[in-house]
Every structure is written in structure tokens, then in C-alpha cells.
Length: 211
Image (cartoon, rainbow, N blue to C red; front, top):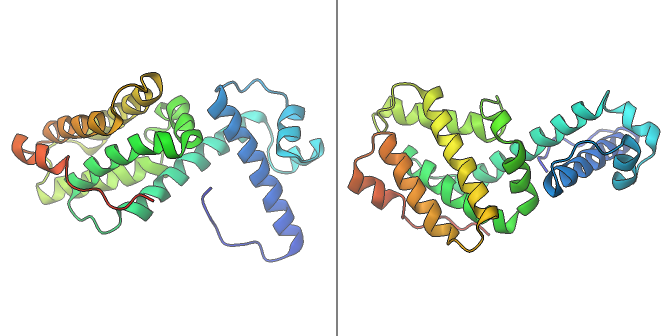
């Protein structure tokens, strides 16, 4: 889960851990079924916290599940930051992001299931992966690497394609995920204005160490 500054005293640490436990439980439920009808009692039991503790942190289940989605998407974004640092070419960042996501479906299935089930509703979020993708798109447009006329519209195409890739990884596990991700990345780069031969090459550059 995303990290933050540690609480300064024992009470705050316990309070923060209770909140994290509730968010973890909500993430597990979203990943397993996407069903948010579970009772607060069931969520509290899964989190191994007292029923009354729920209302010390959240006013409703809706607020909790929203926090769980935001937590997962921010973890996704931070994971990208950690592994893709050092790539300066916006086109390579886009391509590496697609290929990285395909691999995360195997290494981080809970995280990717949350993205699969709830990602579309957060495509224009001001945190998580969306804000990072928008930053890279704007950098590519400013440098002339991309010729898309509008970064937000480009984000729609990029995000929709990424979510389709995630769906493909879970719905068709027989399909080669790395190959599918590289092919989709190439198509997206061409859509963004990268010349065909360049897009083909960039989409297949060696990936950074993802361990």
C-alpha cells in the first residue's frame, strides 16, 4: 500500500493501522468479486477490527470502498514511479507502462483486479496512475514526440486501452501477455503520432528490472 509519514504516537499508530486494515479488507473484496454489498460487520471481521471502529474512520461503506480504490491506484502509480524512473522518452514510458501492467496482472493480481473492476471510473482522477499518464502525455506533446491535439482526449484512449489489456490478461490467460502488451503499446504510440518504425522499436525496448 502507499506509504506516508508514520504517526507520531501510539494512539495515532493504532488508529492508522485500523484504517489500513479496513482499506485492505475492502481492497480484497473488490479484487475477489467487486461486490460492495458486504455488511460493515463482515468487513470489520475481515479486517480483524471492532465493528465500532469502522465509524471512527469512515461515514459509510461507499466512502471506504472509494478509499480502497484510491489506495490501489496510488500504489499502482507509485510502483510505476519506482520501476520506470530514469526513462526520459515519453514514448518509452507509455510503452513500458503497458508492458509492466501486463506483468503486474501475474505478480500483483489483487491490485490489478481492483484496477480492472474500478479503473474506468477513476480515469480522470487527480492521483494514482492517471495523473502520471497525463503528465507524460503533456511532456510528449510539448517536446513534439506526440502529435495528439489534446492531452485529456489522449488520456481517454490510453486509459481505455490499458484497461482493455488488463481485462485481456484475466479473461484470456492463454494469450501471451508480454506480446499483447507490446503490440498494444505500438498501436497506441502510432495513434499518438510516433512514426510506425519508431513505435515498433520503442514498444520492444528492454524493460527495466521489475523485481
